Image (cartoon, rainbow, N blue to C red; front, top):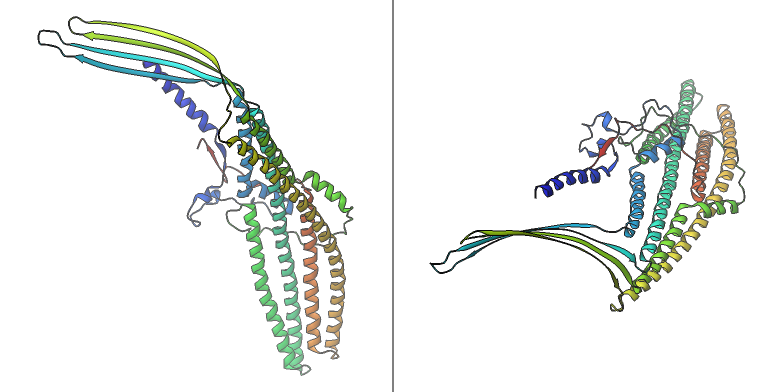
Length: 489
C-alpha cells in the first residue's frame, strides 16, 4: 500500500508538469487585461518603436503580421490541426491500462451462550494490467490519417489566405492615410492662396479700385478652406485609427511624430497578359488550395465510411495478480494468506452485419458532402478568376485615369493663373476666378485620388494573384516590456 501511494505521489507531479508545459505562447500585451486606460504604463502597451520616424507600407505590413490579434489567433489553428494529425497515428499503438482493486471485509458469528463467538477479517489486493492492439479495422485508420493530413494542409492554406487578406487590408488603410495627407496639403495651399488674394483685395479696396464684394468673396473662400481643413483633419485621424487597429497598437492611433511618405505619380507599369496573372492565381491562391484540400478530406472521409461495412480484428491481453489475507478470532485464532496470478491474451473479431441502415446513411451523407465541397471548389475557382480580372482592369483603368488627371491638373493650373492675371488686370470677374480656383482644387484632388487608386489597384491585384512580397523584418514592436510570456497556464 505504501509503494502504491509513493508511486502516485511521484507520477502525478511529473504528469502535471508535462501537460502544463505544453501550453506555452507569447501572450498579448498586458494592456488588454486592464479595465482602465489611464492607469496603464507604457511598458504594458503595444507601441511603435521609439526611433521610427517614417512608416513605410512594408513596415506597416510587417508590424501587422507580428501583432494583429485576429491573425495571431488564426495562426494557432495550425498547431491544433498538426496535433490532430499526429494524434491520428496513435491508433496504431497498443493501449495499456493499469488497475488496482483493494477490498476489506469484517464478519462476526453469534451462537448459543455455551459456544464461543468468532469474528473474521479478510483483505484483498488485486493489481492488473490490460490492453488492446487493433490489428485490422477495414482501413478506417488509414483513411482517418489521410483526412487529418489534408485537414492540416487546408488549415495552413487558410492561415496563408488570412495573411493575404490582412496585407491587402493594411495596404488599403495605409493608402487612405496617404490620400488624406495629400488632400490636406491641397487644402493648405488653397488657404494660403485665399489669404494672399484677400490681402491683395483689401489693399485694392482701400485704394478704391475693387468693390467690397470682392473682399467678402475672398473672406468666404478663406473660411471655406479652413472648414475643409477641419474635415480633412478628422479624415486623417479616422484613417490613422483604422491603420492602428490593423497593426495591433493598444493606443488605437499612430503618433503624430510618425510621418508617411508623400504620394507621387508612379511610372506607367507595363502589364503582361491577363492570362499570366490567372495562371499564377490558380496555382498559388491559398483559399483555392484550401478548398482543394477540403475536397480531399471529404473524399477520404467518404472512403473511410466504407470501413463500417467490414470486420474489425483486435488482440487483447491482460495480466492480473490477486493477494488475499484472512484472519479468524474466537476459539483460537487462525489465518492464512494466498496469492495468484493470471496472464491472458487472445484475438477478438467482430463484424457488424446490420444496425438499422445507420452505416448506409452515413455513407450517403459522406458522399453528399463530397459533391457539396466539389461545387464549393468550383465556385471559389470562378471567384478567383473574377478577382483577377477585376483587379487587372482596375489597375489598367487607374493608370489611365491618373495620366488624364495629371494633364487636367496642369491645364487647370495654367487656367487659374491666366484668370488671376486677367482679374488683376480688371478684365475678368471674381466669379470667374472662383470657378478657376475650384476647378484647380478639384483637379488636384482627382489627381491625388487617382494616384492612390493605382496603389490600391496594385494591392488588389497582388492579393488576387497571391503575389506576396516578403515584409521587412524590422521594425516589429516586440520585447519583454511589450509582451508577457506565459508558461503552463
